[in-house]
Length: 282
Image (cartoon, rainbow, N blue to C red):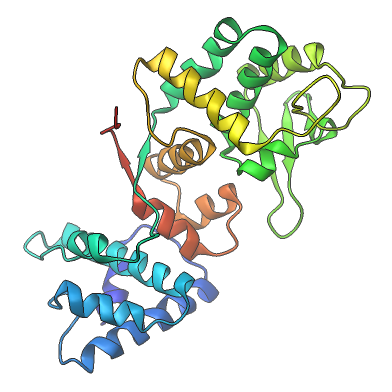
């Protein structure tokens, strides 16, 4: 049994057959390049590992190979603590534009932000931010998904539902009473709901919000409420926090993939590998 097969057996992830075949093919090619150097993944030096990853072809493939090695290594070390961790050293050597680790925010802190927004941000913009944070906390939507939501995508039920996206990544979300209440408050104050279908607008004329505006408002609010400045605080960090919460609750990679709208399980595995809790940079 290969290291990869052992890792999958030890893992609680439930991969589909097609995704497993993609993983297995990538792992086989990765190991083959290392075997040409007469070494194995768990005994290879970081420079050998980097060379094997760079032989993976396109950058997206290289990045997923690194995430795959790191994930397999982590799972095997869980079973055998005596194994070394080459992935940590490798991370520092990896491509310059590799994504940084994400600090996950507890769900309770995200709830505090949504509760505090109406009182800390003036006027209808505070209600807009509160509704947006409530939706993000429960759905983990991407930037473009939350900014292009339409008013008709919400059904207040009961239960309240939110429909997002188009096939093959369209999803339906059950919304909590708190989220539904924040959305109702926002729609009541919506400055131009009769002139545009957009749920979240930038101004009284129905202009489209941009990601930098959303990031700045969330960042300022988190500084006021949490008392510290969290670098990179924005939609991406909230999305990572939702993924971490799902993982802690026992969701499989396939379930998290569907929830986040990833087309490939390798994207989900890569995100989960980069998330850790705590250690916010002030």
